[in-house]
Image (cartoon, rainbow, N blue to C red):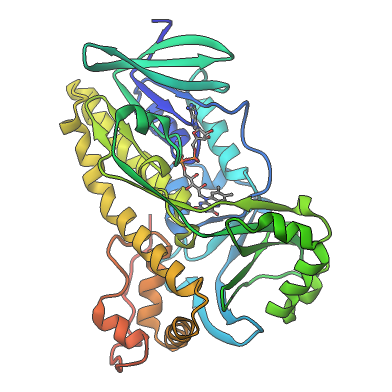
Length: 424
Ligand SMILES: Cc1cc2nc3c(=O)[nH]c(=O)nc-3n(C[C@H](O)[C@H](O)[C@H](O)COP(=O)(O)OP(=O)(O)OC[C@H]3O[C@@H](n4cnc5c(N)ncnc54)[C@H](O)[C@@H]3O)c2cc1C
């Protein structure tokens, strides 16, 4: 072997880098391989939900983010395309102190996480390092074959973690059955200028139309615009002015913001997919994050769930380390603990895709009825919000709730929201 470590992590994305930190804090040897040449750059809208804030706070990282890189947002307004308000979601219903969403400047959270990883484990992160295959003794995985800076390297490890995203090569090398679904709708993200300080998010839904506008730091606004996955080239061919005019029709009250859209370099394309791996573990190998359960961005939980995985897996790997048992049996409690929440979020996001993205007028009418009910029904509003905020593992709506949300049944408990204690 050219190198050895105890836990070999493939991928320094949202999940792998946090796992490296959590293991280093526990004194467990680890090495993170990342194929990219350095930390990510470029545009991507990013919202830190309350569970992500709490997790970063517990790692001592939330306070390290300078205030000017995040924008706390309390109100999310849902409106019909054209401007009629349907519903307002109020994050202050959630337990303090993380009762807001944080809209972040692109990549700062990730850069802060990578800096922390370097501090906790100075030689624990290797860029330009690509996983190629497993090294085996007989049938046992004993490490990986990787390429670092173009050189083939053999790395011995007790366990290999695939934190390498939706198209995971580690998952493939493990031979885990997985279904990969590509949604027909994707998103164009754009960074626009906000003329005056905008503090509340506005999310427009219409017939096959979604346009979200999120106030961001530095007087910017992120626009999230639904485009069908194969129509980007056509959209660009139609030109910037044409898109600007479409946005003005959807959100006439925000027309001045759209005038700051002048060039496609202000935009990034965000493909959408869902991953369902049948099992996440085998003897001496495990997948996590998008490699195990990538989900539609409607859940607003992709990065949060990868980080939740990292913290959960670090605890299980600590048990494995103490017992020197890296079997599938020893790793399985990680999957057992994490599956309910990610499965629920995948289902919730898919229901939102079904109703929010629809071009069917009847489904659109139902969607609008549910939004209108939620506007005055704090119980149902709380149940959905607490799922998006990453604070529950069970589905927000049962069957009775669905009938009540659609306005077919009265809800005598509409004003009741749980009394909660502060989150820590
Ligand atoms: C444009 C965009 C915007 C998004 N915005 C949000 C958002 O606002 N909020 C949110 O919660 N989620 C968002 N997501 C989803 C979120 O980024 C993912 O769910 C989250 O990053 C998953 O973390 P992960 O560690 O599992 O995978 P990733 O973050 O994808 O990390 C995987 C890493 O593995 C590396 N890798 C892959 N193959 C190899 C290999 N063979 N060898 C070595 N390294 C390898 C990759 O380079 C990558 O760095 C967004 C996704 C995209 C694409």
